[in-house]
Image 1 (cartoon, protein in one colour):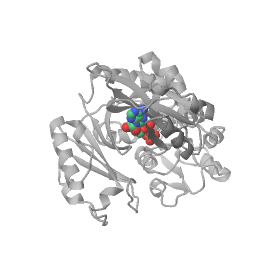
Image 2: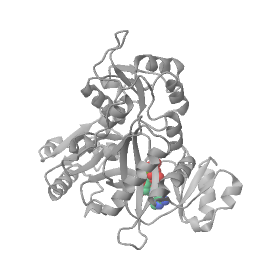
Image 3: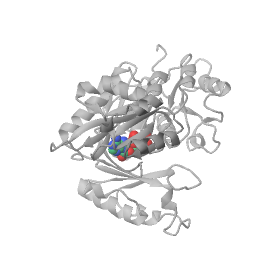
Length: 407
Ligand code: ADP
Ligand code: MG
């Protein structure tokens, strides 16, 4: 678009300061706003929640629904460009904004990420060039498709095509009878059945792609999920076999470039046991935004995933990030705010913050609930062994799970 780049600190012809907007006011939006403001941009958040984590720290907070015509008009009039922080933002809303403003990522890319059926078709067309496949799967949208499911896909995981996150909208099924019950329980909405794979590990790759097609990104993160939610991210050399790391990055770049993606994209992979020493890569899903597994970049890299989100949408250069410290990120779910007897408590920040290289990020959510993402703790240090030791100490203090797979 001809009116890019949008320079931070600039003022347009009618005296309006360069303002960047975001659809969604969660923690990802908050960290985006903070990165944009550090550069000197004004920010606007659209989120109906008056207490949204991003709305609370933004210059402007438009408190309407995501499809509200008035709210979208206000966002477009305030902002020189708009991004999104959650994938279930209505694609139509992004489309409407795109009539008058650069929107990154665009509606088409977000629509693919919103639907597992389209997502898998896209992966098959784009990740294959890097030798990466999807899990074997079948689409179940009709009773005939249910009846025709190959038994080789069982045991499997039935996932709703739309609106799933953090393990929601998923049911593990062992046989055809359980599959039929699970699909009925999900009200017969379009689903995919995926074969349950023997996971050795999970990882993710975050890249940023500009309007001009320039692409940059981070090395793969090693992720540990507990109960379907990310618990731990390990980001340092040796976190996964180098050949797999290269292939995961190549597959992610291909997935982004194939659809002319603009913005920050995260792709999640499984490493499955195929009998080889390294294991094989399987692509799982993509998020059209910064990702929980990339939060360590705020403290361990010279350029964070949120900096790249700002740069990409505003048409600024996309420098290759340099990770200067090994890092482990521990997710802080609301569970940490309760003791073993479910009594509310304040986590022992005193002990955690006394540990070397700990960076606490809380998202400003006033009410802690089990499973709610309240914040994260990144541990950086001079070497991997030191970071692991500190992470274990912090996890012990806070009662956090998920560090065992790191060895
Ligand atoms: P969400 O949108 O909730 O993140 P995912 O598809 O990423 O959904 O699934 C959540 C988690 O469930 C994954 O991170 C992985 O641990 C596990 N999982 C998902 N699909 C499979 C599969 N086909 N085989 C084995 N484990 C899986
Ligand atoms: Mg996932």
